[in-house]
Length: 302
Image 1 (spheres, helix red, strand yellow):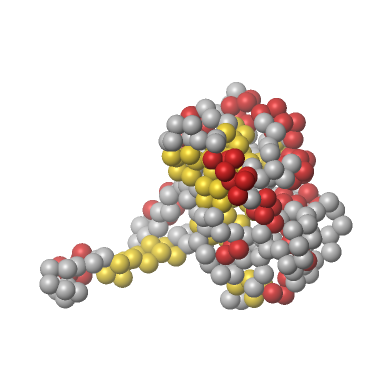
Image 2 (tube, helix red, strand yellow):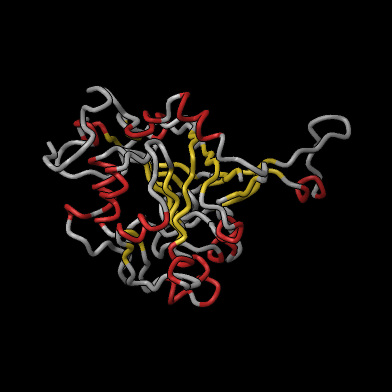
């Protein structure tokens, strides 16, 4: 059982949704007022996969993770080679996609993704995470997320294109930009994805991210989720690991102790260029039963 400040038991002993419970109908309706122009921006990176090309490696990702695979079970070449149409004049293309989302594409972490000791968030037994999936706190419990999004454009605040790899964002800097309301989705821009096109080696040299202090500040303000354009919400070192001790690890702090879902590897450049701090945030993960996460296409409605 965790002893630090946490949300265990707050939403009932059987809860598996964490602070997404704060998105009540009244909170959602209030969030919808953040849309002004009706312009819709995608906040997702592309899923670019192929079995016989370098395409997957052209999208930012963490090294050592299995890259997306995209292949066709039937395509135009099959018909050119003599395959029978499925009907008179009727042909079809059918594809298959394999994505290991953590570290390779825009995704949401489920509450079963990381824990310490023998318990998941809210005291659910970690032994319920099996080889076929998690029978507690899986991504299927998320449903749809409609909330007020608050953009924390930290590089712009500091007059930078992107944060340096070793930068850890303090709570005071977030507070200068905006104080979130309960049920908000905090969207943190580091600008780190733009480094990818300049240098893969630099991108893999580490990553900027939130400090543990900033994570605690967001948790204390009851955000529904935390999203960022980096790969781990917190910072990473050159080995792709968090340098903080376990009590300050942001996955444990937010997912495990507070039940706050994490959304990683967003593309925030167009949103930042729009200059809007508030917007409507919409996202719905795939309903993967027992999934530790899901690919995601978050939307910002301006």
